[in-house]
Length: 125
Figure (cartoon, rainbow, N blue to C red):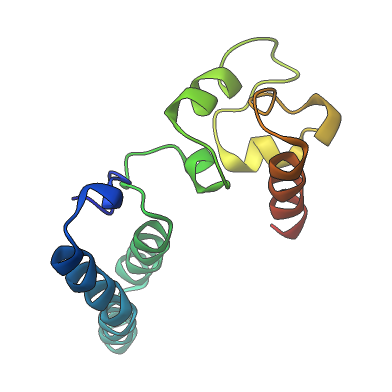
């Protein structure tokens, strides 16, 4: 839970080591799950496994907003992005990527360096 809640700084050193190991081997386990799905020709389950792998890598719950996958974004920034004028708000990452950088909401409290990181991430997606 600590990883998905993004509270790993509260873990003891021993638990941090365990978490690091689990995250390292989780990608192999998820790949094996996808492989089994492919052999059983279960496409939707394979897509769900791929999605799950992305959420584990990004430390998000499946119910969380995809906007939390952006660097530095927390629930507070997501709340700000999802409210306001229709032309500037976004309910998910795909909608947020379509907004021009100078009109993107949720970045006002970030440093210029952090904004660059966010915009670069958006340009790569």
